Amino acid sequence: MTISCLIAQHRENELPFHMIKAFENGLSKDEIVEVITHLAFYSGWLTAVAVVRKVFTAANKAKG
Image (cartoon, rainbow, N blue to C red; front, side):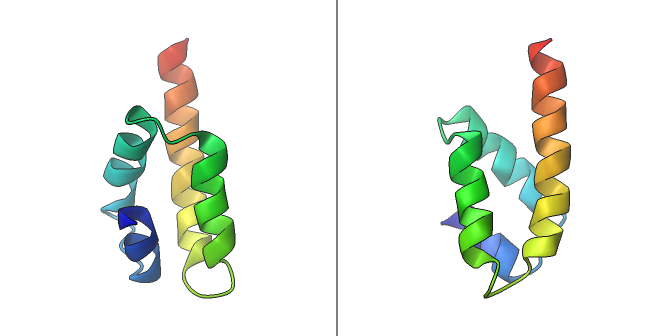
């Protein structure tokens, strides 16, 4: 829900923190992508795509 609201409000600065927390709390990459895909026709999905790429890249590097 929080991610959806932040995407809709174009809150690019807050999105990374909340995406990381969602990921840490069990949301899968596919589920995060589904949120972005669902919002594609309604709000700022381009911003979300750029942010999620950075978050997923950082998560992959952290895993080693």
